[in-house]
Length: 422
Image (cartoon, rainbow, N blue to C red; front, top):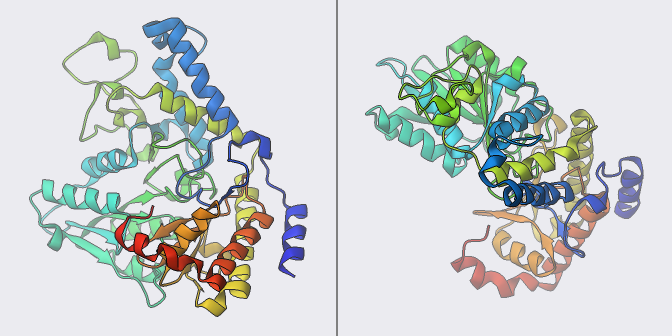
């Protein structure tokens, strides 16, 4: 029955990007696109073109030719903006997610004696927690007192009502995930932003696990956001991150200023006085990596003609099928689906809970089935809808069932216990 369902699903909703546009190694089931998207042919070609331009023009590449590097970051930001429902002047690209988050918190977190807390969910991605703690400390506050953690419910999820209730009168800002990176739970961005506004709290949304998949409408539903571009946007390892600042908050004088955030018409005047760009580009710091931007620009070509609503619907179908396959084939070995079943409460990956998840991830990799492990007990499987088929999902679950049946993962238990498994 599962095989027939997979065939029907693939016939009705085939991957929108053909297999020959990807550089996934033959024989590999790649279900880790929520950690790092695979290399694509357009990204590879764009990097090669950038290298050729560097070889041919040297430093003149910054100013000469049809596409000089000088405004490459702005051009890439303009291509990203429609994918998150923003205006081009509201998006900036460059640096890392950590740098972008620090920039937004440093710029907009202004604690007072009565409104000083920063809210973040329990078990947040480490970079978010590190940024929150360090920003609080820069204001002379103790993170143990000024950082409030949102507790998880008995299922390990964030209850939206509890999130809204936690935004009390002593809260200045919150850093919330569009999709919780462990369980894959999706939060209602517009609803919680509205609740935060009523409470006088400004939210920075971390959309790293939803950008390029969920059809966000940031101009209508958020004030501030950050997101990486190497997951569902497939921009490459360490690809430049992005930030969103609603135009109502522009122009902005960032907490941390760099010459690349200058008004472009005056950047090379080499003045000691900083004159910032009018839009979110003022948040830029140093000179961007042209090669990294090139890879991202190439990967964005894959989204030409793609409707994100259709892409998310395909992801919903695939994750629903993955959960059903796990129920049918893995439950006898104590594997539990740890992601919400409601379509609106999940996005691109399913988390499977099992006490020996770390060893299972290694056993799967030995079979060239690439999934992700997150401590203490989660396997994350991402049927990224641009390239994954239902048949791939079923094969991965069948591999996992066979490993459990054979006890094959036992040989990896020692390695899993002493080594970090990414």
